[in-house]
Structure formats: structure tokens, C-alpha cells
Image (cartoon, rainbow, N blue to C red; front, side, top):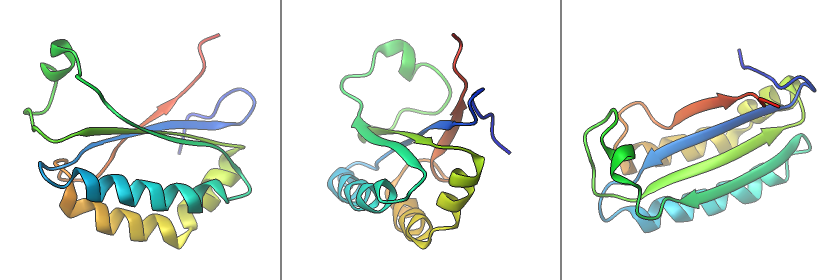
Length: 118
């Protein structure tokens, strides 16, 4: 399902854009989720960021521009089992259901699984 690192770790980035005027709600949801996810035994990292002044080249890529704030969440899990356990937690489903109407992406967060290159 995922592209785990050589040591078995699962690393990913989730990205989404808050609809204009909904940024504070999205930020509050992320803060709430962070508390729950960081308490999971297999979670190594759960860090969230708001993109500040993205460069024009990033905006020119895929989706139409939305003037809301872009958020990025970086996650790492000990291994595939820890990641599967994370997916089974009810707080993830609650977060995704609440997040959906607040973001521009019609299918939810855009997930990108990462693999170390060195």
C-alpha cells in the first residue's frame, strides 16, 4: 500500500488548501488531530505547517488557484503496522469528515508517500 523506507518507516506528506475564511477552523482541526496522533505508539513525527507566500511556480502547477491558506502535514510512522494502526484510529475519520467541507480539494487531502534518497 505504501512506499516504506528501507528501515520499514512510513513517511508521508498530506497537503490541502483551506477555503477562504475557513483557515482558522482548519488550523484548529489540525491542532486537535496532532494531539491524538502524537499519542499513537507508532507515530514518530506529526508536524503541521502553513505555507507562507508560495512561489509563483508552485501556483502554476495543477489545480486552479484558491486564495485560502495551504497546509502541509508531515507524518512518520515506525513501520507499516504502525501506519495501518493509525489509519484504523477513529480520530482520523472524525478529522477527515470535518475537514472535507473546509478545503478546496474535492477528494480530501492530497497524500504523497516519501522514500529517502540517500
